[in-house]
Amino acid sequence: MSKRLQIIAPILFVFASNSLIADEDSRQLVELPEMMQKHMMSNMRDHLVAINEILVNMANDRLDYASEIAESRLGMSSLESHGASHMAKFMPEGMRQAGTSMHRTASRFALKAQEGEVLPAYNALSEITSACVLCHSNYRIR
Ligand code: HEC
Image (cartoon, rainbow, N blue to C red):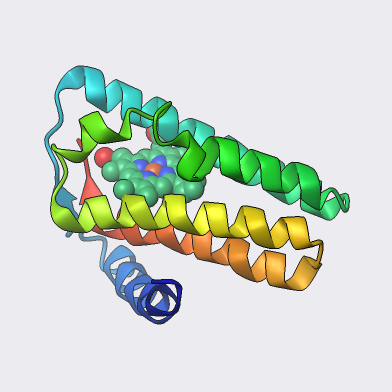
């Protein structure tokens, strides 16, 4: 999965930036019940906060904190608190996969960061953000 994402993500990124330049929105609209929309957007805002906290900790040589944040807020351990199983049934397959790959890459980052080597950790971090971009390039909920 990780290798595949490494190959696919940059390609999709180029596609996404092309469509931004053309000012067209080709993302697929996924209709969610209103409560889920709210829940998902609040999760999203926390995802961004988590990424930022990870970066701040990495910049301060606190890879152990970065690891904890990634696992608990984005990784496989966060699935339940995000209500992932409820949301998954409203999502098209591709969106579900992007979600799963975010959780997986976050858990993988958590392990890498624990090993204490900065560069491989950054590499693993970019796989998380590639999963964010992959989903954002393809789907919208409003
Ligand atoms: C499974 C798909 C998916 C993944 C993975 C994903 N997002 Fe999102 N995110 C969305 C969708 C869909 C929206 C709403 C876009 C819209 O409808 O305009 C969104 C919106 C957001 C918003 C805007 C929230 C608001 O209140 O306006 C932020 C910030 C965000 N995402 C951050 C992230 C970050 C950071 C990651 C990765 C760690 C991430 N997302 C991963 C699908 C995803």
